[in-house]
Image 1 (tube, rainbow, N blue to C red):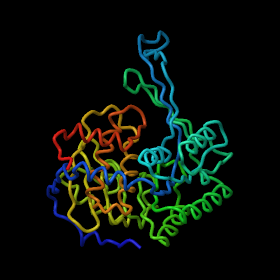
Image 2: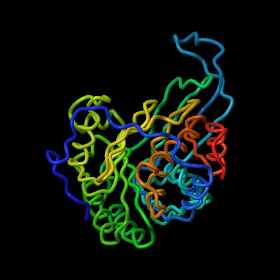
Image 3: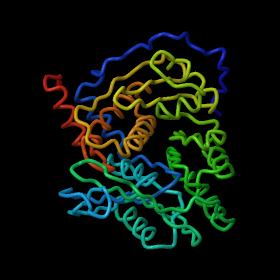
Image 4: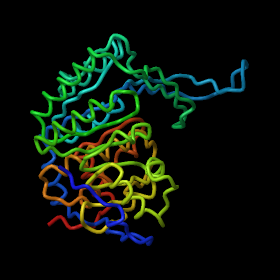
Length: 357
């Protein structure tokens, strides 16, 4: 079981955290690490959805109201939420299993089919006839999001669906190397199932990573790594998180969630890394061109979890790899992923004179 922390015993003075170099990997080391990620079996538990992107151009304002008229040029439906974590795992050569709920509708069936076709195990994707599959639709014009509208059901689910999810969790935990809990606050991550998943994972000594949601803070406990963003970290602590109080925030989050490690993602300001026992550090962002940050948190937790599973790297090194992969992803539009070859090409652009020996 994870160590239980005493916040007063590990509280760090309010001071600037140590900043670490971005040049921790030589290219051969990066190649070896990316190869080590392949084949890992990961259970992803949480809220799946469809990310719909309608792209076009604005050439006039509507005569009916002072709003832009978007002339549609393309429409894409992509697996989103916890299913985007799955996409990121697949892009890096992992073998994910999904446990989640979808509705008995076209979007649910399409999502199941696409995940199966991409190579994800979908035996744990439970169909609930009383729910609508979550769909987030974004209207994008000239690379600028104009509006987003959501179609979804956020209600407690019935006993039949809960029992199927319980069975899927128990079955999947016997087959995987690690667990990612991707909580988007749509109702799948609730106390009974969370407790069951943690219990099953602990019995098998599985690594557990959590991407949290504010509404469920009171559910979380006994995990290996939690990855709140700065806003979520502030809500967990009860104060706005700044660089000056990051060390205090990290210690408090460790204690509140009974988490061995914490990484606070800070957008363009990089990451604050709080390992289990070593000194907390700051890591600056690797992104050089940012087109769309949608789903970047999914990328980070996918990479961190893969790197934690027997790759022989520290949490700081795992975070550097996640930072590098995220730098590729935010340079694309929509909920994107990055293959190993893209990560290496991005590394070469960042460090054209880095040693290859």
